Image (cartoon, rainbow, N blue to C red):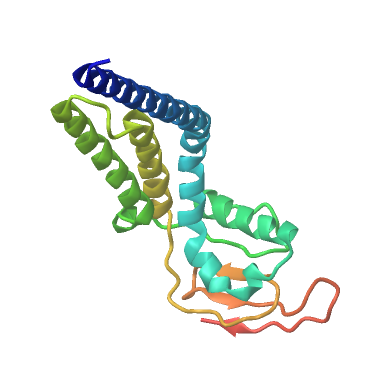
Length: 210
């Protein structure tokens, strides 16, 4: 066989191997992309459903949880849920379902609190969707993924964060209490609070705090 013929055959073989490797890599990437997309399709609906309620509850309760300190963080899970329920329901309706726990007053609407970390995150996600859409259009390829789901989650964060911020009361004092929470809030005064020290069944000591 002539040297030129052998060289041509070698080049063709090398080229064919290169194409096969490229095709194999593309198949692997395609499978990974499909797998990631499949996982994303399952996660995004859940995230969209939970985005608004989680951002609302976290925002409307964050200042009270900070005010309670370890009285909330070290409380048993059942008591935490009671306190959290009182905070959310009390702030929105003025009524607290659990009378033996912290009594949250009806929140005063504060428009300035609408601008918070949750609404900012939502705006950022919507901004991403706008930029990503334009970038993909300019590049002629869907390089930046999940545009629509991110936009939808962003909208939910704005709704939940804005409503939570609107109903946020910012306490004027900080609490260093280390016991479990049994606090009565008085809105007629500058938030006078009585704290019950110790876990349920122990002796308690109450103190007023303005």
